[in-house]
Length: 328
Image (cartoon, rainbow, N blue to C red; front, side, top):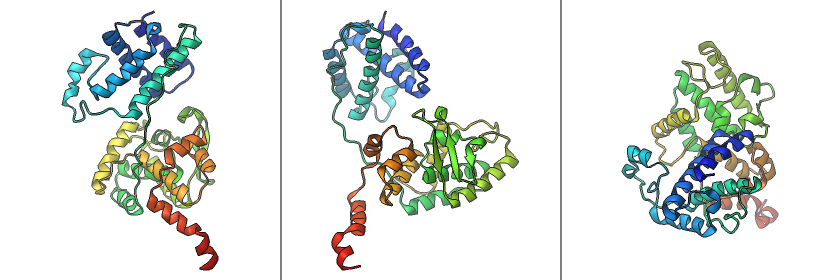
């Protein structure tokens, strides 16, 4: 079977495993790109004919060409005019290339499991070294400015402000937050139940929020019920439908600009802020990992143990043995 014919079969397998649509799209985009490249560069049209040295050449070509210089669909590439992008031909990060390798590896592991090939070409391929850039965080003053710039008289801005409060106070992801429905919320216990089908890791979990958030959340829900009949806590007013992540991201960028914040931040920055503030206030990594819904503590460590020196110094001063022994 041709490489490009195997990809839809693999996608069907992924759907049967109930993988998230965005995960499947990521696999497909990478695999169609890789299939087009091996056909053009190596003359290969069958997945089982790919050799490990071809994958290394693919990586080298990505590093040499740069962003958007190769496309699986030539016709779409012409219509999209990628050469007009500001980052066209800029260096592709090792993180991105490793994501490609990870997606290709999942595909070849599936081929191996289905006994479609004798030898897996990915077995000798190693990921590139990568250093993740430090995450952007918002200071107390920036958080206050961001919240202050929203107008609670407007349905959409009041809604978006409460979404920010939930994410910053509970550490939820933006998709999880926007999907919250009324029966998931317990205002008396100040908890939100996130069912498995709405979480990234496909595991249900409880998240919590403070008295302050509970007070504002309760007011919002009463306000929302008078203006929009919807099962969702944060709906689009006109239709009652769940707000999309891209819609919220567009609004968030507007608020960030309005607040005069020049950092490159997104709604996910609020979740990052939650995690960092919990760590700096003394929460153990195991508790934080469960609250964030990570698959393991290692994921939490990789994601959030990039605390800056000035923050480390502040935490050290709280625990200095000499200061605590002699100068209390």
